[in-house]
Amino acid sequence: MKKIEINYKWCKKCGICAAFCPKNVFDRDEDGKPSAARPGDCIGCRLCEMRCPDFAVTVTEEEA
Image 1 (tube, rainbow, N blue to C red):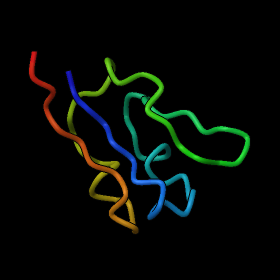
Image 2 (image 1 turned 180 degrees about the horizontal axis):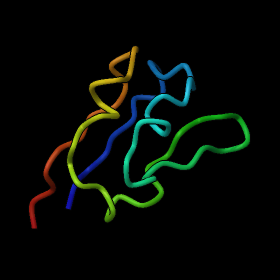
Image 3 (image 1 turned 90 degrees about the horizontal axis):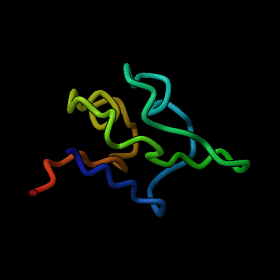
């Protein structure tokens, strides 16, 4: 399972992480803030991490 962390101090709520996710892992709240709603669906491609212009998303392997 992957651990997806979002640094909300850096995040400007652009939605790029959600737009590029091939597994639709992210949801956005009413303010546009992303959240990893379905981390179990994450395949670890790290497109969200690579495309984030603010370096606010980090994807790591969660230890069992």
